[in-house]
Image (cartoon, rainbow, N blue to C red):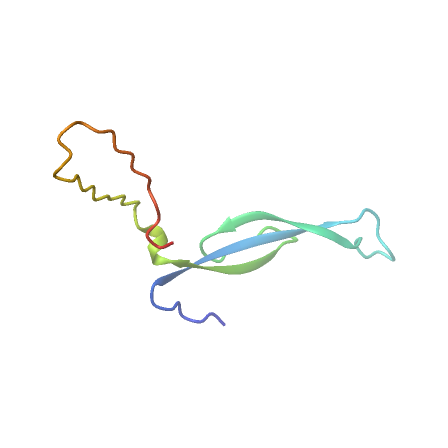
Length: 98
């Protein structure tokens, strides 16, 4: 069951087709033991014809909406009235959230 995304977040579903990688050889006609697995395909909707021998798993990514906002750098530079001669000013960007 997928719970609705809380305010400020967006959910994105992705379907992974996962293929087992088996150890060589079989025991009593059964395939070898699964020793690892690999994602062999990804889709945004459930595949109509998944690859043979794979399992399909749905993953939901919950991403903050703010992650999609474009970078909007802004700065306010105040030059004091008593600076009548040219001066070099260095500005260091900081994250206001920190």
